[in-house]
Image 1 (cartoon, rainbow, N blue to C red):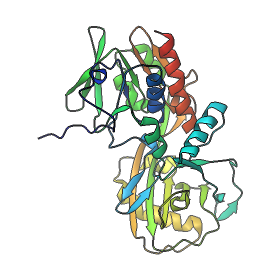
Image 2: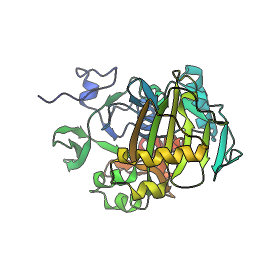
Image 3: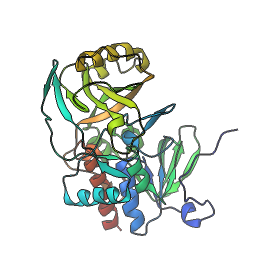
Length: 344
């Protein structure tokens, strides 16, 4: 027997608001949840669908036994006044904190200064905690991969990858990476043409736990030579459990070259590269795993932001609409909420 989809706390199937929700949002990452929160705050009835087991998207936190890792987005910055206020609220609520770490640049064994100085923030106790806070009280339905939007009698019918009907909605917003958004927007050629301009690079992530701390004079590093691009002592972030855990990201060239390989088969090469980058003979890890992010980083973003077709009741948002940053994802959701509200 198929298990029913999991739902976030606060959902009540007997509530008629959920049965007649007017807006569906596909994707429970930063953009989708910021949009859902804004629309719900304006009195609109919203349901969010996500293929994952919880909120987060690329801000997810992954567990390997007792070890937890921020295996996607590593931190976020806050440049604009509105997002700074939002981040301060998360910090006040205890679900985010500034990551005051030793950041450096690594290039051929040379340790250089932080190339991007400034405050950096993380979710506490994991990156996805700020998404949990955004989604609190919203109707978010997990383990559901929306594979098709079908227009029928002025409404959108959502279908799952298994062919199940997920409901009919007056409005639908696609808040997933552009390559995943394209098939869902197929009945809106004008939107498809715009979204097709966005491009993404993949990333292979390696997740490591050690028995003892690695003796290096930094906590995070931007790596300037292949195959690595980034490495960080994940256990050194605020609010993390004790231990010695590292996240290592391969660069886009290596990740693209090996995109269709089993990511675990790449672990020996990445492990060796990690040791070479930090200049240590690494001890055997307590835990080692890999994850493939097929659409990790927007490399070509749209110039005109999120879009809303009021006639079709269809639109999209995401970091790829503005900039490759968490703040851009959040702001794109708020911007689309204003477009929807202005359309009636």
